[in-house]
Length: 204
Picture (cartoon, helix red, strand yellow):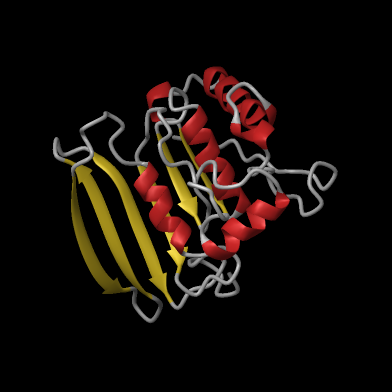
């Protein structure tokens, strides 16, 4: 009942086979890797007669950062974004600033995409608070950037829930909604978790 486009990077295009989410050319609509990925998704969606109002993007780590780029650049294609241990749009412009954003949640003098004017899509973020690869501070900034996009319409309703999965991690969920009731973001902070998938194999 659903179709997945499972795109992978090559070591030829990135030494770690990671998406180049931090490059200026990959933070522009109709350029670089975002343009290729969006075109792939649209091609497959049309071939399989998918509902174009139910197309979403998700990723982990560099894939999560690229998913954020795609949602930011192509809100007409992607109606929601899932971000696992990722970074906000526009928080880096080269490898050095990418490493700084990963360590601290933003490069010196950077605004991590604040003030962007493109429409936002509903965003869900998962991040471990013991993540030593990508700072958990990035989770707040991603959800913050997913807020209402109309000037003077920044008011949000926020609810916080803390719980524990059976025999696994505890977590805190913060949900934000606009005053009209539209869900803009969910932030799941998983306590004690590092940089890896929290479900399935215990090896991450």
